[in-house]
Length: 122
Image 1 (cartoon, rainbow, N blue to C red):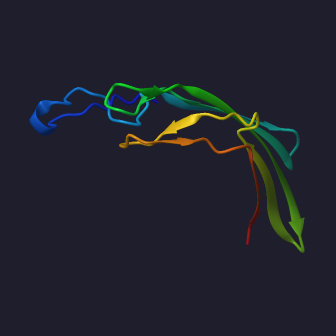
Image 2: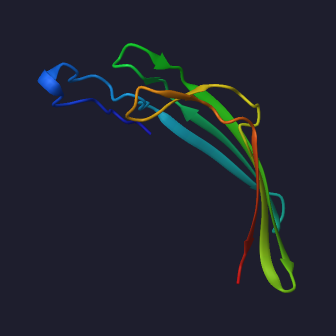
C-alpha cells in the first residue's frame, strides 16, 4: 500500500507539507497458503512496514520486515466440524520500534507470539 499522508492547513502553515507523524508511506503483506491435503494447510506471511517520521520530519523509525507461520487443520468432534489453528507471529522474535499513527510517540514491537484458536461450524 502506498499512502501519501501530508499535513495541510496547520497553524500559520508552519507544518504544511510535513509527513503525518507515525504514518509510513509504504507497507504490505505477502501471504502464501499451502494445502497439504483437504484437512491441513500451512500459512506463511511476510509483513513489511516502511519507515515513518515521528517528530515533524526530524526523526524516523526504520522500515522492518517480520515473518509469521501457521497451520490449520479441519476435523470434527461429535459431528460438529471444527477448524483448529495455530499461528506464530514474529517468528524470528525481532525487536523493532513501531511509530504510532498521528502521534510523536513510539513503542517496542511485540515479541514472538503464539495464538491458538478453534472455529466451530454449527
